[in-house]
Length: 93
Image 1 (spheres, rainbow, N blue to C red):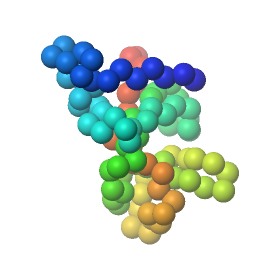
Image 2 (image 1 turned 135 degrees about the horizontal axis):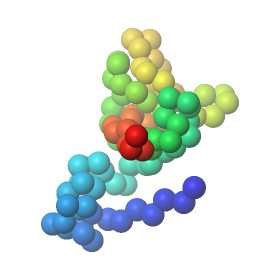
Image 3 (image 1 turned 180 degrees about the vertical axis):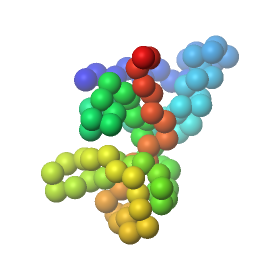
Image 4 (image 1 turned 60 degrees about the vertical axis):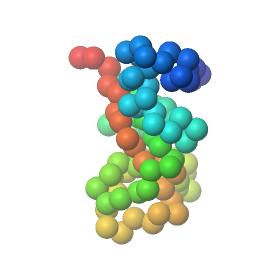
């Protein structure tokens, strides 16, 4: 899946620019991810690798079998956290 990212300063002042600023406060560390689990089927996860992991947050974990989505509990291993989910963009119903 190819994703084209437009820098928010290229569309500054527009509604799209404000939306990008809200979704991607740190574009160099933010990724759009899809198809990780049935929970997000048809959705796009906005994942920021610069956000510190915390209990109760959804995150992408690096495992022996690849990346997986999980909710962090009190026993999470921060070295396995690939990035923290900051937004979920769902298809309209």
